[in-house]
Length: 575
Image (tube, rainbow, N blue to C red; front, side):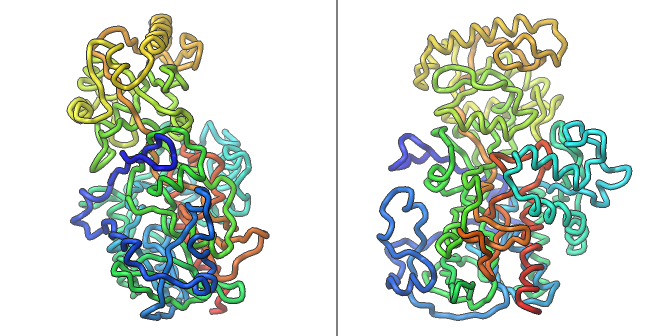
């Protein structure tokens, strides 16, 4: 847990998650160390102006400081390409393979040691009207814009736009959703295998889950295969190299300045640059600076190298930011210290169960079974509190150890399958406090014991009223409407009081793009030759992930946006 110097009490927890431990043997990258600032050559003010960057010291406020980009010396090497792709995750690798398909010379700049990026933390992507979700396999979804019609492109498009209050562009959704069928076929033609098409919770059955082979995760196997395909097609890639600054000439992109791990500056001369660096999930100062996040404890799940590099270099070159820059794919409670090598654990499953959730005032703040229906919504509810806790009893723990979780947790926490390691993992976590005296536990975490007891008493009364009701009945919980089957009293110790951070998978807001993934400036004009996709591009969401209506939409957007960018770039280049 790291304290921010300029943001009171805010903490940022990182989880290697899904990646480092389990995928090391798969040839996927770990995080490459950045060159210490003191060792970097200093550029002149005119050098920075030529690339569209601001000189050091030009911005003095904390808000402006988060946008600063690295200073660079003179290039020691120059390479040329039709397209320079920054980032080798789902977006960048898709762009590279699409470029090879179209006969374009691409060079990939990647800060990690190989292909993978944050995409290795994904499990599947949304797909509409694909061969797996067409005809008799096309779902009819009660939560859709048209609940009696097949859940195809138009129905899903309107459903998602309504969910996002029509903040995203209609044309962007048309381009993205309309290309899904082709993209699934395209991926399979390049060696990707889909294991199944399933639903998340009560959502539509459109989540195309990747086969994971013998690897630790589906996303890891996907990127191992995808990276091998890019190599097979002859893609030039510079790994352990950071994209730093865009080169602009006469208002058009002319290339990129990059820096390798030794501090050497590389100039890439290319009339097209595609930015796909994965967003800013691990840059806590940037995240707090641009988002509405209030919770002092937040935890990124996934790769630890998402620092906002691409977003910052685009802004320095004149790019506008889409509405909702601070949109984050929140997923709710994560017990502090319980998640290390991976988040697909029994401890994670226990932490998100619909027990009693408390804020810094010892009060409930949402219906706790919200997580089961819409984990993104639950994550926002947690985000809006200063501090958050989950409270349950030894009886709850013993029930989970015998019968499994009360509610389904993705693909790994299943009712009926015991949470055999939840106790061990939680007991070892710094955020977990267990004891017979609830007031004493409250003192350990600086909660008002009297306020917590008042909340517990009211909650227990609601649990008593829920006894004997139909499982789905919500009437007993007059304050929030939690379903009766999840109303378990907190009436006897030992008590488990866990301080939780708000977990999240990725950031979703960023550079403003149009339906072709072209970057837009502050005047609403296209910046010629500049494209952005994946988590670097904004405009796909309102305030949260639309997991209820398009599970895997960000993963699908990553691949589709990379392809959209290169398809348009070919026309731009006249080739």
